[in-house]
Amino acid sequence: MRLTNKALKTKFLATCAQLREGRLTLRTPDGARYQFGDHGPEAEMEIRDWAAVSAMVAHGQVGLGEAYVQGLWETPSIEGLMSLAMVNRHYLASYDQASPFNRVKFRIVDRLLRANSKRGSRKNIRAHYDVGNEFYQLWLDEGMTYSSGLFGENGDDLAQAQRRKYERVLSRLNQGERVLEIGCGWGGFAEQASAEGRDVTGVTISRNQHSYADCRLDGRADIQLRDYRDVQGSFDNIVSIEMIEAVGENYWPSYFGSLKRNLSAGGRIMLQAITVPDSFFETYRNSSDYIRQYVFPGGMLLSDQVIADQAKAAGLQVKNSFAFGQDYGKTCRIWAQRLVAQKRKIKEQGYDEGFFRNWQYYLEICAASFAIGHTDVVQVELAHA
Image (cartoon, rainbow, N blue to C red; front, side, top):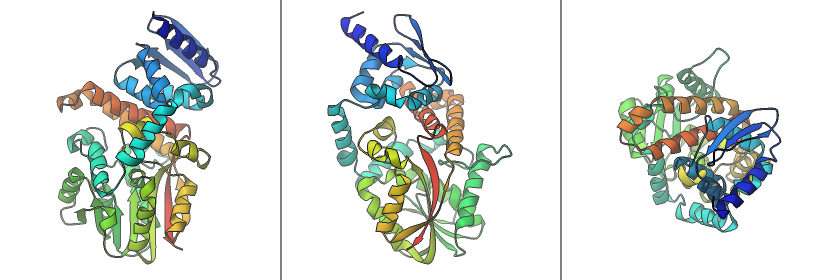
């Protein structure tokens, strides 16, 4: 073992020894086995190459994900390991954040090179949503809904949970018929809303989503390939389900301004958003993570207070908020299980091992984050102030 690896091992083992919640079983490249922690959730990690630890030292949690995609470490449960890491975040701080230089680099990439101008938004969206409808069909529910489900107490399956989520959104709208959906995805909400007699206009900037949703709705809703900033007209209700995460901080005023401009007098907005705690927002804002670097380029989460502040600045007010983060943890867990079950077919579509590991890692770290309350999902009702 080179001296560099000895130093990496010594520091990493000393850090793991500080775990206070749960138990970690660690296997290292030299075949050694260690146990850290005590009572609580258990997780396992096998480091196959010390380059995995080097990646964490340089890039923090971004490096941890990069190393997993490269096959430098393994675990029976990404969700279990990430849950353990998140609840012990304070003790693992030296491996959580990137080096000062790389933190600055990540922020420059996030804020400047991936800015969500109209052109930048189309580029960023293509990176995630236009990988192929056939890929998403393998692991989403049959309604092709890519947002949190709302599970009932009677053992809903994923498709039922997605319909229940749409039902709640529709139940909170006013009686006006004209509904604008910003970020209509593959048309799941538009289909359910149109079946209830609503006159739906859905907009997306993903060409793959537009072609799929337009064919699916077949004239029952007006599906447009259009940026939210270019929508004209007034609507009785506006719905936007987990689209705001892709807007980016610099464009939040434009987004909320668009909601204000397109909402008729007495209208209602239903905004579903993934959030971080208010107390964690500034730390999150001034750092980066694997998802922002490799899954949703240009994206950024808000907190409850940030939503309220942005709404107020645009002349809107929060009327009600409903949180259901545990349901998102379950949704992501089901997605990850379905993804793994379809690995052979995903490979047959031409995607390589790195592509698969990236998606598995992303879905399972999301499941962990929602399960422990590190992130939440809320349905926020807005109206004119």
